[in-house]
Length: 187
Image (cartoon, rainbow, N blue to C red; front, side, top):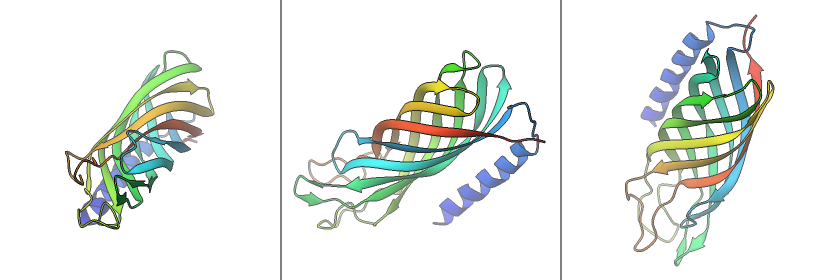
C-alpha cells in the first residue's frame, strides 16, 4: 500500500508540473474515459470494466506524450475447479500517441507498472497468493477528433508466473473498447 501511495504522489507531482505549462490551443489535454472488455485468455476472469484518466501534451504536431492511470475491475470466474476472486488493476504509466492527421486514425501505447488490488488470494478455495502487480502494457488504436477518442485496446499486466494454481495461469489482461472525452487545459 505504501508503494501505491508513493506512485500516486509522484504522478500527482509530475502532472502538476506538466499542467502548469497550460495552453488553450489543445496542446495540453485531460482525457477521461470508460472501457470494457473480455479477459484473454479466460483463465481466472471473464471480463473487465474500467475508468481511465490521462494527461497528454502534444510535443510536436501528431505526437502526444503524457501520464495515464485509472482503475479496471476484473470479474473472477469458476474455472478449473477454482472459485476465482474479482480483482482490480491500477496503472501508473507513461503514454505515447501518434496522430497522423488532425482527426481520424490514431495509435499508441501506455507503458508502466500495473498494481493489482483485491483479495490477497487468487481463489476463495485456494491458499495461493495473488500477485501484487507487474509490467503494464496497453497498446491502442482508434479514431479521434477534437473532443473524443474511440479505440480498441489490449490491456495486460505481466505477473511473471505468480498466482498460478496447478494448470490455471493467473491472467490480468483484456481486449476491449474505450471511449474518452478530451478536456483542453488552458486559459
